Image (cartoon, rainbow, N blue to C red; front, side, top):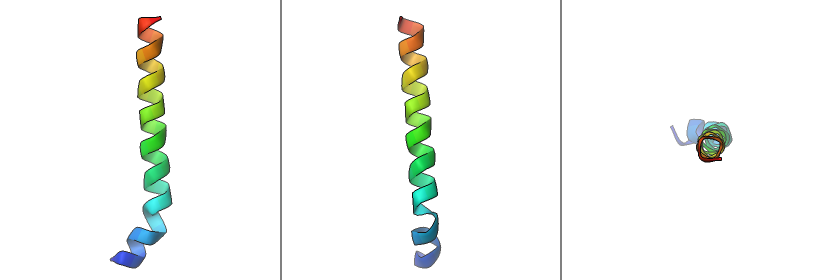
Amino acid sequence: MTKLWKRYKPFVSAGIQELITYRVNFFLYRIG
């Protein structure tokens, strides 16, 4: 289980980062 987590952690982190960036950009777009 830990090995799987270590293998997939970068992908999960990248996905979350992308999601946050997308939501922030969308939010700023709606405001501006």
